[in-house]
Image (tube, rainbow, N blue to C red; front, side, top):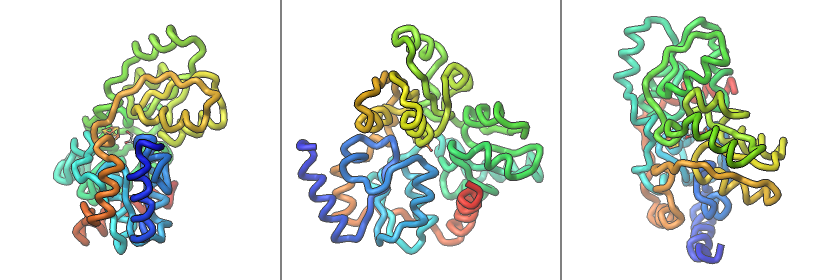
Length: 302
Ligand code: 13P
Ligand code: SF4
């Protein structure tokens, strides 16, 4: 990465000085993902790895809710997010007060909160889930009905795989909601034989038209084990950029939509965060205790 060599060398030096590690989501750009990340993965993997971290400082190269999750699981460590404005349309679609109203409306029905939520929302939930374990979490509760928030498309996609009745919220991911079944048809027409992998935040019709649906880590796993000759990852743009580096023999067709929040994170901002030890993620203790319970319950189950 000659163009980024200066920032990468500085970040590596700062990581040693600060005893810091960089956790990066699969949607980070390749110079972050392949250049400076110590651990990469989907939301579930990042949450799991955050528990095992021994470094004093965690730099979360991802969006704000991911950094909050890392802080919840590591209250004693410093967690930095290189740009505090890196949000998420799903996390922004619901508040803690909304969850309390849902509970009044559906008394006794457990609340499953997607990790793409604020700590305030996690604190009001019974348990969290990610796209990688949503069906398992919903079924683990052993009840006929659950409230699943905030992603209406993930909720529909989970509902199609379980007998548990799902009460959904009306949130959506601004990246994945833009894909359509017509996009998939066009892909298949212009790239015969292409294997289509879709993220479960896509509308139901897109998931139905795909060959496989799964979390970002599940998509990486599919490519690694099934080795399709031609593949399309119907998700954020950096996914194919990152995965294709490891599979030069596979043709990656690249339909994609950019996540403007993920793209706020840059090498320069990671460097600056380590230089200044800011912006730091902090969560009030009583809120953190309640939110942590929801995340830990999820990790115990899977
Ligand atoms: P994953 O958990 O599949 O990585 O998804 C996170 C996300 O933000 C998808 O838009
Ligand atoms: Fe949120 Fe969608 Fe961006 Fe993921 S891709 S961080 S769900 S807006």
